[in-house]
Length: 194
Image (cartoon, rainbow, N blue to C red; front, side):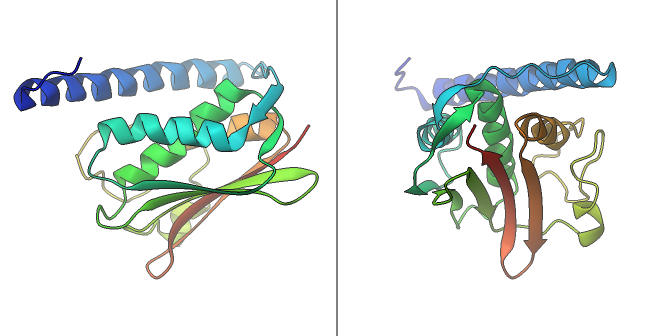
């Protein structure tokens, strides 16, 4: 609310973070329950600008992670028919994870590439502890979690990346990860335009 009291601003920021985490956990559990019963995840497609969506999600996350630099880069045509709310959840998860596990001195970079006529790809990159090779094989499964310790020692259900995969696959796309000490970690998803 524009308070000038730093202590109050910190408490409000923590409340926002906690509420956001709780909301994400509840949403993830609802999606997991839906998928467990074999119910298709509902997708409502409309014309969506992926670059604008990435920028909006990055702005939201910057507001509660002011010490981290998040850059959004775009090339080509970032538009297509997607469910903006579902893809927004994917982006929030990927960018949020990238911030959480990044080296705070190096930027988190989101790159939208729309140079292909039939698909658009998004890369979310950070430098930080790499995801072990064996964990990269299972990281998109439900209840799985990499062995990298959470810097804040918070508990997680390990559903975020599984839900992200479900949403991407429901659009006919795919999501992958590469991670090593030298090049950092990059989550990439591709979506067909229609």
